[in-house]
Image 1 (cartoon, rainbow, N blue to C red):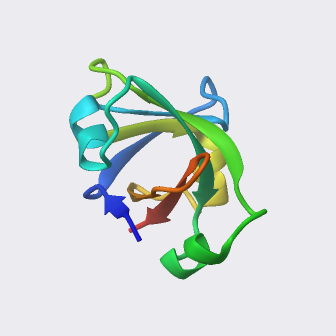
Image 2 (image 1 turned 45 degrees about the horizontal axis):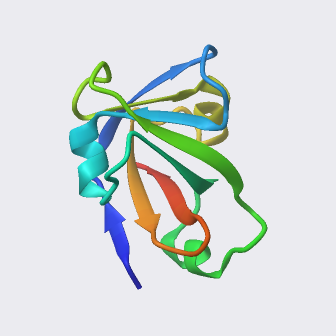
Length: 109
């Protein structure tokens, strides 16, 4: 299992973001092994690592963008996604490499 994760990232949630868009700083993306400016993943907001390995239909496709405009240690995301997770102040990203799309789990602190 090729699982990579970030440290805890401060959440910046806004209605201007789609539920299918996440923005991180390239240095935070590097921790996940992301080498391109944008990547398509299957997103699982909330849950546990056990659910990530077993799940097939719970997630939805989303894009992770790496932008220098995003502060280091911050994730920009949809307010709706943050509400589903209980408005966490910090979340951690867990990326499980898979074909054709990697799975990305968001866990709250």
